[in-house]
Image (cartoon, rainbow, N blue to C red):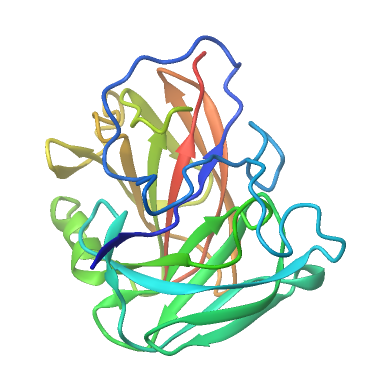
Length: 272
């Protein structure tokens, strides 16, 4: 069964002008299988989160909840859909007092207790099997149902394929970051350049079905709205960084990185 993983659209403040006119959305959000409402990042910039509540959701007196669901292995380097991951993994998220809470995934389902309810809580999936990478994603735990959560795992071959045109290989000691820029209607946004606050050895843009290294001047997102930062300097625990977006709109998004892991996010922007 092909399903879609949760990919929070992290909202960015961009001067809040008129709406952009862009091509149709590249595969990223399937309303039939996921909540497509957008949320603001932990910094509080951007639009407000949706009002959907699950058990222990928004408005909970405790601010903590138990989330359950399954893990999806992404099919390709769009990092949006795939099939259920059948092997064990460890899943963690931010819990009470900012500490990480974790649980085991048995290849079928997981249940993670004491998860902090927040506009964007960073979930990490760490597999024991080969062929997939530890993967970070932001989940709007304050505004979604606590059941049927779907977390993504990146395919190692797909990630390594991004490096083919870069002149280097993926470092096991560095972090990787995939950004999919979308507008308020979750349509992919072309014409965007990105700059990462952390040191990245590789910056690439998805163009005509391939990943092309940044030329330092004219490279921008195509109609897929995707860009990549490779071999990023990051710590062994979650490391904060930000991505400045410029071009058809100007925004900044906050992200979490981890050495040896890949972060996959949707970044929602508005018009100038």
